[in-house]
View (tube, rainbow, N blue to C red):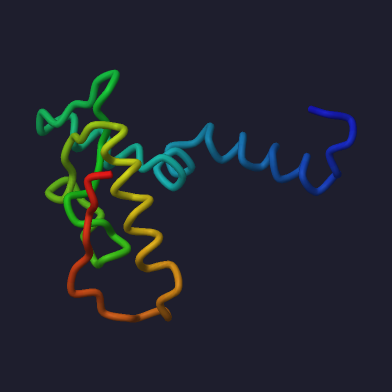
Length: 104
């Protein structure tokens, strides 16, 4: 680790490493259980396609295998970015009835 990293940051990094060595930590940070469940259902990403939520959890979508699909990585980034820009200033609890995705 870099010599100028603070003790608290070093402790946090060590804590994260310890968490990631556990099944619970992998599930918490990487949703590993969800990925395994998707794989068991035949939903398998590749080099250019990644897991994505059909309905993003930020819009009320479930965090379960039924709400998972495989989507092009770049398209996923564009959709996520556009969605974030449209909802980031909304107060917590605001109901969202739809959002727009632009081609560009």
